[in-house]
Image (tube, rainbow over all chains, first blue to last red; front, side, top):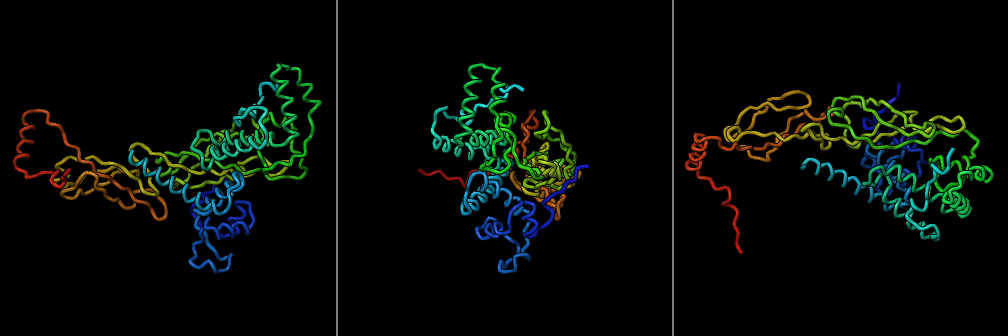
Length: 99
Length: 304
């Protein structure tokens, strides 16, 4: 019996993102600072362990870590690249509809 | 064990000549890594290519490893199969200080450079992969079969994955313990599947909305009517408003993906005009032309 989890159905706390992605909290904080991840709470001055992340951030964090480790892209570049990747995915879907 | 059969031409993989200096190889490596990185690549089989590119660079960037590899390459191209003996005597247990953690090396690499010499139990690496699911499976859930290449199996393993219902493009599923096997008794990593939903028959997915084009007749559009429309949740009756036009969209609430909250189905009306098949039908059209005072182009002005 394979244990399967659908990762989009919940929000995540910072510790969960860290353990799934196997990274230090410091890196996730840097990601937030650089606009790579966006906590739901309107006020990011809330204590860090109160932050809640929509599940979209989990996938973004995983991609960011891979691009950072594999291609040496810096934090500034990562936010831009992730946004562009999302835009491309969106455009591809829309294009699909028109075909 | 046949090293000739498994031989990997690392220079060819990186698209460089054998005598190229390291910094030029680095440039070639960087360009290829960007092109084949699975997260950004448009290429088919990007994951496999990316693995090979990394392994090639791993060897060629290290002067000692490169020298050892060059010797093997020479022997292999000289056709000396009995050089297997020469390999075994030259094989050393390299202290694997790889620039990247946890690369999956090919059998060829492991045969030349020896196994990773870590002693303590290590958790296996996670595998990240993308899969395509047709919209009907995304809608109702279902079993999807995938092939995963584990290093301990010669052939790849087949996994039957139960796709939960209501997944969309960008959804991610985690299969516990189905990643790379651990080393020295460590537990296996996890398998992450990123989903891309592809169309099913005429149904297409955009975010959580299901889209379909619905042809209607000119009189259904002009007079308004109720028609039967298919959805993945069964047939639905839809009231076409009077004077509907081609391209007009209508939203069927809750008939999209069964997410929380459920998505909608969007139908796009397409008026199809039947060609007249006989004199009678042509007369009807001619009568329409006479009775209607209709110029669809009167708002299009061409001035030069």
